[in-house]
Length: 203
Image (tube, rainbow, N blue to C red; front, side):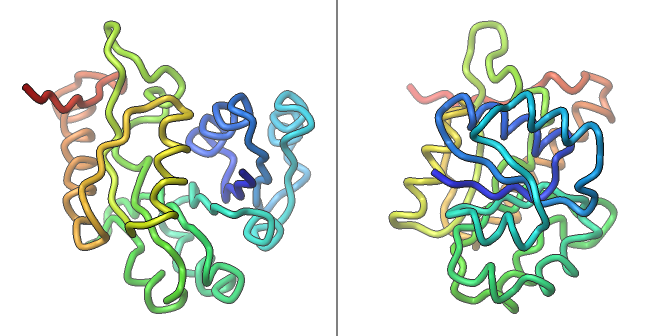
């Protein structure tokens, strides 16, 4: 699968490493293509990874992952709306300190034909790097459109490998974000550290 990842910091780079290992092709979309850390990252990932502009990554990707700072989301979506419309889009960015943590309304206003998912936002990146704690595979709670596009998102979650737990369509985006709020509260408010995660248990 061709995946465009906007952003190459902790979330974007960690997901990219796992997806390249699973056989996917990655193109990072970044503002500064001269960043030595980015160049070294792509060289380490090998022939299945490259970098370019945000527009390059969006055009390349069957799936486009937003892993940029939350305060850059609106402008990035608006500037690339035509390219994004019709794509499978995963919003992993958190708009910290704002009323809404997600960017769903901006996506819907500017990319009405995109398939939107809210995923990879409610755990620290360390849990993507090592998705097993005490021998138990970590769950990833997410939401988004049903249909063929959801199967592809499930595949990408499993390739981390996390266990996908689907909460429903984008009407459940606030529930997904509440899990993020819980994670932040436990990790930092209760000082449990970033290596905490969640598991759904069913009898």
